[in-house]
Image (cartoon, rainbow, N blue to C red; front, top):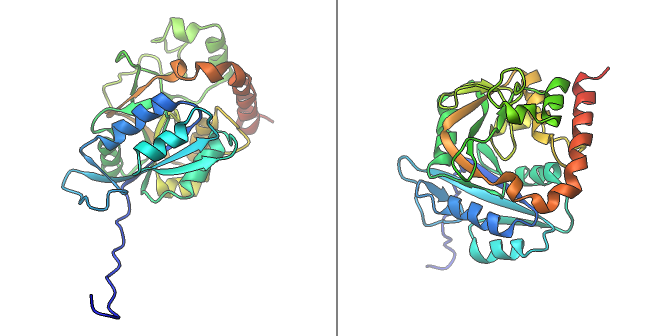
Amino acid sequence: MASGVSAPVVEETRPDISVIVVNWNTHDYLALCLASIVSDRGVVLTGDSSAAVQPGEIRAEVIVVDNASDDGSAAMVAANFPQVHLLVNGRNLGFAAANNQAIAQARGRVLFLLNPDAYLRPGALQSLVNFLDMNPQAAAVGPNVLNPDGSWQAAVFRFPSLWDLACEAVFLSVLLPHSRLFARKEIGGFQRNHVREVDWIQGCALAIRREVWDAVGPFDEGYWMYVEELDWCRRASQQGYRLYFTPAAQVVHYGKRATAKARSSVLPLGFRSHFRYFRKFDGP
């Protein structure tokens, strides 16, 4: 190249979607989660500068926040997934703060929060982006979340009441999952093969338009764990935004199997978080 002549600077196209994964000690599940993203032939990752987006494909970035894991998760991501943008925290910041941290750096026009103990079925990211592109009234959308055996997992809900929590406490919502009375929060009896509007979407798999996130604001970091996404969806609803479920995108979520180690230490946080939620939105 001749002296004084510089190569043109090419600005990378904005990602269609930013996949955000907050991890704490889920090494093996996290590896499966990330592999399901990078292996999807319909997804071009921003870290692959040589790949052009073809018709029907989407461009995605992946951000992993490791909340001070001691199981080698961060080293595994750095070694095996160089396309992933890795943020390593010196202490566990909790779900809300870690997601806010990642979203502050995310560039996608859609934000997709994904648990590390979940993995995508092929085409899931494209389906979520396409749904939001084709439904401008939708501020956010949740996919069809499945258990590892293929059965449906509750991940979209009505806003809870104290009655709903009482039904959960005595397992009525589990024993009668199709009841419109005892499984009201879980939208008991609804047809899961159709698009429908919902009140709130669980944070294990939640896609949000970036401009809506910016308008509603970040997660309330007063919740260290649990209820953060419920709180956010309630605020979005108060501002008139509409949330949806689509069966076209499928995500497999291990859920309680993967979090058994941590569940005993954080279970009381769930009760405190729900108390804080009801006091914030429904209290005097």
